[in-house]
Length: 249
Image 1 (cartoon, rainbow, N blue to C red):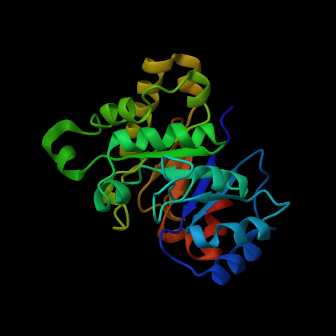
Image 2: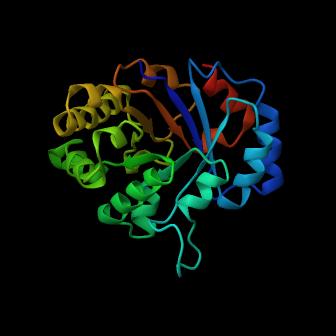
């Protein structure tokens, strides 16, 4: 049985002290981890302080990115090995903002996924579907080639450690969420692609999230669909009271 994930992605928001205050505010109000896995992804500077604040609680702390090497002359990048040893559990890879603003390719994301797995991190791999492609009649089928590229070369055992996130780029930060049927369509297509690549059992085991203007008013409708195993939340995760409503909805 797939345990749902509610993951907040703070992006480049909150100072270290604000992040710790947030963790202390919510950490004793979270659902049973056997029912829901709660994750917070924050800027790198806050991660170790958040791990300490969340110690002995169900809350898992995630990185928003990492590099595809564990060490070397890569100024400004973050080592997946260092993240893992610091107690980080998940890492978001391939977010549409990374692809669009920093020109990250599927090839680079695939390299990051492989190195993250080898160093004990569980990747949350994002793939998107642009409004333009939907209007052109291609719907969400473009995600198939992205999944094939991002998961290339992974073993079946590795794929079960990966969480996928379907994030239509036109819905991220716009307040315009995909309707639940659109979200479910994208998540189903991702699952079916993984089934085609790795077989029915692996496809059924992988957790798939929806991300894009998720909030406390639409989360229940989204998660009512069998192929949506949780959500990746942006702006609505920045307020602790709103985030608690989301995780306990």
